[in-house]
Amino acid sequence: MRQFSHVYLSSLVCFLSLSGVALGEPGGDDNEHPELSTISVDDALTRFWELTPESKRGTFRVSTFEPNFILPLHYTSSINNAPVSPTLGPTEPNDTYKNNEIKLQLSLRTKLFEDFLLPNADIWAAYTQVSMWQAYNKRDSRPFRSTNHRPEIFYVVPMQPNWTPLPGDVELRFVQVGLAHESNGQSDPLSRSWNYVYGGATAQWRELMIEGTYKQRINEKLEDNDNPDLIRYRGNVEVRVSWLPGRSTASVTRRARELSQQRGSWQFDYTYPLTQQADGLRLYLQVFSGYGETMLDYNHRQNRIGIGFLLLNF
Image (cartoon, rainbow, N blue to C red; front, side):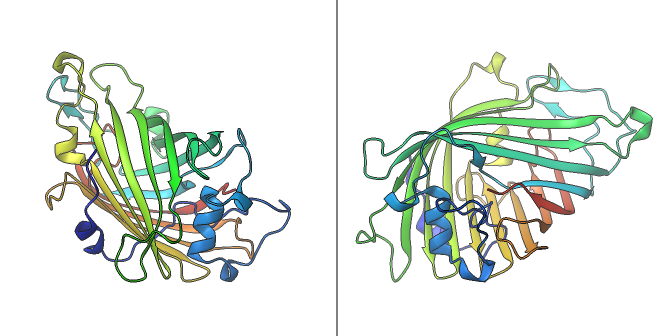
């Protein structure tokens, strides 16, 4: 598995939406809700990923993984009326789809093994589901236009504080490797799926968190491949820079093929608390531009903006 490029990491501007990090309080009394201003990036990463012996919560305890949200206002500049792939061909156009949809995401995880092989290293399993719901499309009986399913298993290894391979006061907090399957669960010609292994690392610099992930596709026979050109459009490298200045969170995410500036996508996320609790309800803004917001749309370019609420962070 290739090492992630530090040059590519440092070329990004600061990002938004801390992916659920810092919204939970592992350990201690579950009824205690710290003020957001008291949570640093260091504390957020340690608590969320249980990187120290004091932060461990045991195995098979369900918690959130990626952001859990609903965007009731979610508009696209170009709805994908006729998905197409090189191996499955075109589909019959649906001109009744509306540009306004509701976007929902549910993401949960649990720890399978604690302190596995290396100090404080854990094995996790997770499931993430993303749906595009044509809720305002009364003519078509309000269907779910697309739903992505992604189960995965991964190994998180914390880095020792005295081991700092990055320059200056940038601190490498942990590395991870994993195996994932992603699909939309539909039949031909709308079926889209891929399997991949991945490696990644997360670093911290003051109020910023920098995450990088490289995905290596597991090859399939061409006749079994619903989307052989997926990486060309959607990419296999993801870099996210997150900013946690206090109450709000912000992030910028770039997805692309290797270091290419072609295709791929950019995403901006911003959250702001609507309560005084760190794990309370948050206002959520998401802006997306490029390819591959869903598996069905992997080779379809569009610009999207969504406004809603971040939910169920624990």
